[in-house]
Image (cartoon, rainbow, N blue to C red; front, side, top):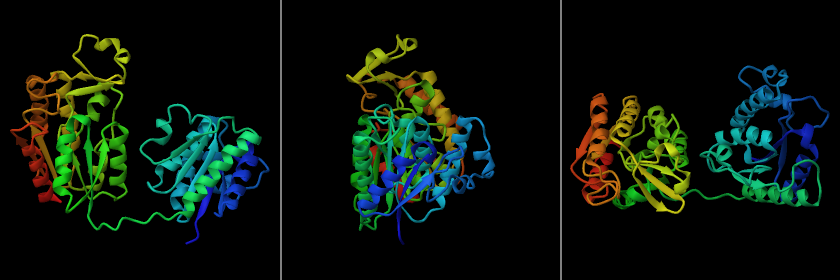
Length: 398
């Protein structure tokens, strides 16, 4: 199938820049298709006019182009673009150009595309915090340096570089792995590395493991792949993102954590890895409300705060409420002798009372069902015995 580089932006304000980008894509040997996502009338032509995109909004084009509030119109066009791109089977890559509004509009649609489709956004905000734009996707962000407001020597270089880069990505065909092993996802933190490495090693001959750092976006990336059908199962050792989500740490998941497992019903083995901690940045960034808590400085940029029994009860209740919605094969393992490398006898976060509060909340909230089993293991999470049990139960339900 012939594939195109979709060059996306608002032709009413960035028509020259979009045309130039398309010319450079063509010069690099790829085939461009300019997609207009303007929300106001104009006379600039595009391969795909704004009206054609707007018609893909679930409630019709008038919801997009009939709005007087620019913010609402941009949000509506973003939804329409998301639906439009989802119908295209000829996408070789997507290149977006824009400022804050266009970046929000285009990257929202990019995030909905499968991982692996090349996505490059040239943006005025690409030198700051790009997490809201990239999310759990594989979007590449390029800082425009100057505003995308007219062509000049500098903007031509930046846009030209982006066009040639995305053309190269579109023209390249990365061969799929020759491995026939089923793909499984795992979550890991530094303090659960020993466990995950042992599990990965035990499954190496039969499964291809994809390990995700439990940093909030790590869990989201794993679940995005599960939603797309890429993963055949998950060994979710490290659910620490829930602690940050409920307490206010910097590596938080969203309310949809474990949602992919609920929706896809794939085999899932979970545990309580690193729920003894909430993550913050430098020590001085910890909110004053937590001044009297127990801390461990992991490195100059990462400060860990020990969770309390009350917090752990909340974590357990939240997690078990999600597990009770799972209709696929499920095993959940509790490591009774500690949930992280620094939650062991003699370590700074060793706190049996807090751990027991977590375990009790899970036990008390558990709804027994034929597909779900709660397993208690008299071992530390990084003990060899615990990794053996994780593997055994996963192989039983896969």
